[in-house]
Length: 110
Image (cartoon, rainbow, N blue to C red):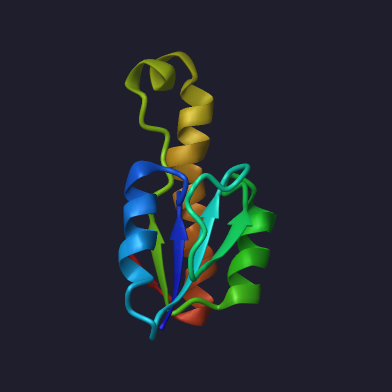
């Protein structure tokens, strides 16, 4: 199964990448914003800005994952309060971009 994990540089994303790579039947593609911060392993890593619809569309159409596990989020409450637009783009718009890109290929979205 081809699994795309967003937010792979975060705590949840890192744990999922490590756990899911234990099953060698899975092909894991991890994404994050910026430089890869997770240990090297049996997976691919791509730097993707999920707030940019074109990047998301290109990513999903190129990879064609069977499943998308969406862990990317802006989680610091104080920063979200002071940067509401960035919070909305990261937590809402990026999720919408992923959902819309997943529909044509029937990718399972989690």
